[in-house]
Amino acid sequence: MAEITAQLVKQLREMTGAGMMECKKALVEANGDYEEAQVILRKRGLATAAKKASRSA
Image 1 (cartoon, rainbow, N blue to C red):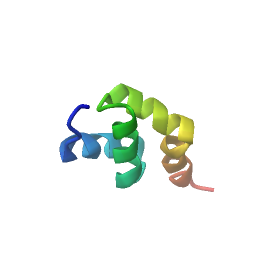
Image 2 (cartoon, rainbow, N blue to C red):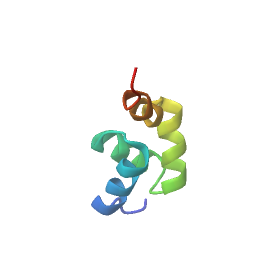
Image 3 (spheres, rainbow, N blue to C red):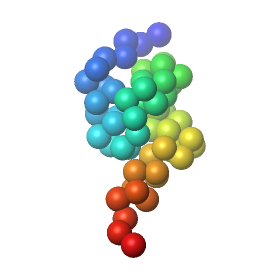
Image 4 (cartoon, one colour):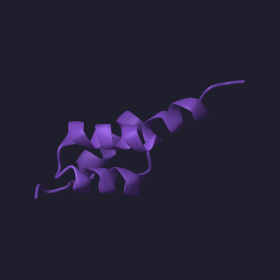
């Protein structure tokens, strides 16, 4: 299993807007693969939630 660093979690958070623990869980599930973690978060709908929240009415 790859090492999950705080820096990697931070990068994923900045990229997706998902929460810290959700990003960490996705990275653990993806065995440290950044790209795969993004796919996992997208499937869970967390990556798009931040985009929708930032929209103005």
